[in-house]
Image (cartoon, rainbow, N blue to C red; front, top):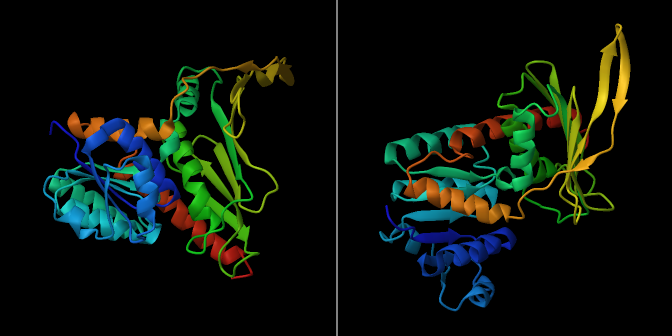
Length: 328
């Protein structure tokens, strides 16, 4: 395959970001954008009058020239649209979560292998240069052995009626922790509560235990007075903090911790260091990675297998929520 011929399904808030980015990268090879809402055409045409818009998704499925699809529709539609696209011999980037059920995700993975097409999932923060820098600092031993990771993803956000905060926000942080640790949790627990809508949690706390006595927790909420996106990675030689909600100095290294001297724990503490990283758009890097994986026939970083593990964690956490949230 020498050229990407792309269609984008879904022109909502995030779908429009995909359209803007794909138009910058592909120009005329972004062939069509589809959304069931005709009103979305105006937003698409503001990006470029040359982009074709339609409400009929079958135009994408039936167009043999289109070899690549981005699915940016509501999560409950991901399985059907990704499956039809793969059957029609198209490479697929589907937004997170890959599906709502592990059996459906496994079917998509198997189908992508049968069709020899790429299946990638939009865990966009794995393409953030700060996360890649953090990963390198773990790999090169800067912070020593990882002991604990925690993340806060908080905001007075847009409340969803079709999914709770766990499924809306937590996939980002689960995918990052999986990427950093390169292993799967051996124990999962979660609690949360519904305040605004029955049976749709507005705040959750998910606790993960990994092999090697590594622990992690993920706190997500759309009932919070200010925006906070903070990831903290604690090792036995130092700590790293990534605060994506800051305008600058987002990534910091703290040479802090405890060491044993004469069999006694002694604290060591140095000044923090701001860590530089490339100022690149994670979404642009994600799309580039997707397109290059197709052209060069390489396995995407956030492939179906990675997304499946994230989904399994989400499902197990959701089960624990049902047992905890007395408002359900």
